Length: 262
Image (tube, rainbow, N blue to C red; front, side):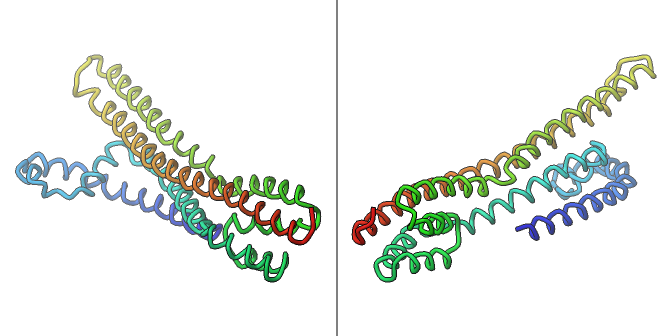
């Protein structure tokens, strides 16, 4: 997972460079694009102008540098979301099959056989089972405490990087609002320089303000959807860990009674 996150980070840095180059290239053609759209409204109304061209134009109009900084929050946020989704997907285990295999292994070969089953199974549930069964010789109470304690450790691993995703969700609209303030300041500076209030004077600054705010809110919404999806995955895995841990304790207690151990 660390390699995956490193790769995604490198991609994000390359994307940031490409965004800057794209901004420089599109800046030279932005005026020409607007003139073509104004001189040929039939093509614009007909939808012949590609969507990505429109997005590039709006990106430049909102301020390439500031919009790129806001867009980076989406890139890094999505990188973390993808890493969490992959990790959580690989953490899923068929707990019913695992419990059946552990119970059969206990009856067939004892604790060592059950530990072998847990070692050969991936996921947090198998790890919790392994830690609990490895303390079997110390008593059922110790097994129960170990399962509960290691369950908390696994929960912490499942929730790793969530704070960073939440941070990017907060930063994206904040950068947008910062762009709004900068745009409004630019608009008032023009008013001060011209000495007159008119729509033409303040239109540029207001457009920058609205575009940066729009981008920040869109990014926050996208990351929030992924964040909630990740939370739902963690909630499902947590419920599985709790239910399977109770079932494991029942199996261990039954095994201990058969072998005359309390």
